[in-house]
Image (tube, rainbow, N blue to C red):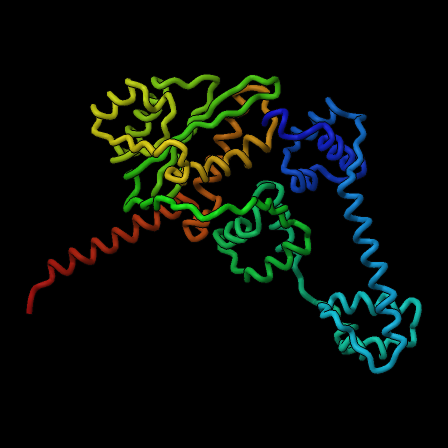
Length: 377
């Protein structure tokens, strides 16, 4: 993670939350940083002060809005045959009546009549037991702090647990786990070149480079290779410098392990247009599919993966050495390929999806052979 990822004011705010009693797991979930980064910041930036003016302004506006609403509701309760103009949820109505009960204990029936809430609904206590679900969500939030609701849902479902997604979402919101949604500026519609999904595994690969820096400012690069069929991570090579010869070495290793692909999709980086890479592709009869300059959507599979890798690893940790990067990356790759659900694969992990498609293809081939061997008449 680069030093510019969090400003000193943001770091001071995070440390202030830690000093005020927030646990490391809660801060990790709320701000998207690891425990190691939190304690390193505490050692380096401890004692700094920063006022979060935006948060204070939001609290003041919320307080002013509530003060305006309460006199109107109190006045309406004193008048007979009146009703609330604003549509309120049952939970909001119960909160208003409970608050009014402190000052007017004898006006409960009138309050229920005006708010159109039955006395039985007011006194109802839920008997739902969500302890097991809350424990599962809490563990998933600690292990994968940057993943949202649907990733948690598919992880629980893939373990064999049957649970309704609406119930899980209710518990998810009750625990305060929803992530902050980053709203992007809407742009005008543009013509995009559609990506064709391969028909089988190891038909088309996508490769790309990423750059980041250690805690001491030293820059490093990562070379990412994924399969377009099931979005499986084939390899992630990280080092301070990655030349075209190193790229060829990685591709040779993957060909010996998975087989030779027909195409490899990439951008116009200097390592990919090198003379050595072109000679190697011609010698191995592999087509290097270069995208048009300035159009990363033509290589959208690996570009989307780069975002996930940056949020889950590069931006979530503060690395001091290249060995730490390789260790954390390998652990995350194993989880991504074997356990983490993928939206484009119907909530399955890449390896599970590949195994199911192979088994399905084998069953179809066996049926065709039996039909051909069946005697006519």
